[in-house]
Image (cartoon, rainbow, N blue to C red; front, side, top):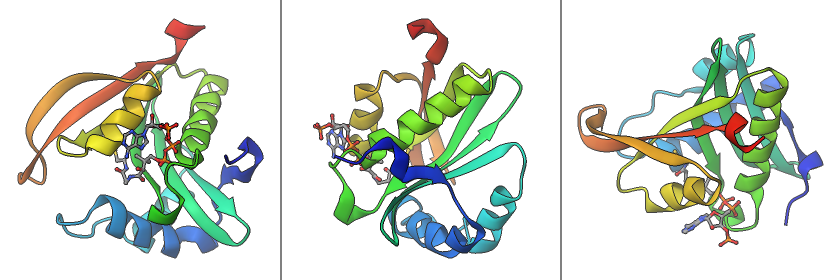
Length: 155
Ligand SMILES: CC(C)(COP(=O)(O)OP(=O)(O)OC[C@H]1O[C@@H](n2cnc3c(N)ncnc32)[C@H](O)[C@@H]1OP(=O)(O)O)[C@@H](O)C(=O)NCCC(=O)NCCS
């Protein structure tokens, strides 16, 4: 099980690896839009957090969350295939939720492909609810679900 202190903000040098993980674990079959250049923009954006989990020099997971006034949108989230089911995703998500609460933001929302049973189970396990199904959400070719969690409800 990973411990919380191995999760933290990404560095500029992580952009390339994060982009590769997005291509391989999130955007497969849809075309690669989250390139290293786009990740770098997120890293430099004050209203966006790019978080990573590390094991030594290895980047084992990452998350990109964009903050609005009262809610946060989890744009990308993945754990490398070799490190799944070891608590890495849970550690990243806890870090994001704590950071959101510290920023005074109580609502996190995100989207997942309808057929992504693993992610849907993961978010359900962490108290997230599926609030809508959207036909063709993914570039018109795949359906998706909107998922959300009100962090304040649990306080
Ligand atoms: C979804 C994902 C981030 C989960 O990361 P992870 O590090 O494996 O998750 P954890 O080990 O913290 O899992 C916590 C709990 O979530 C649930 N869970 C996680 N993966 C699951 C799976 N494949 N099937 C069923 N439940 C799962 C389980 O309850 C698990 O607890 P357990 O292992 O004790 O049973 C990871 O599978 C992933 O990166 N998938 C590909 C990218 C992706 O789908 N991203 C999300 C897009 S919205």
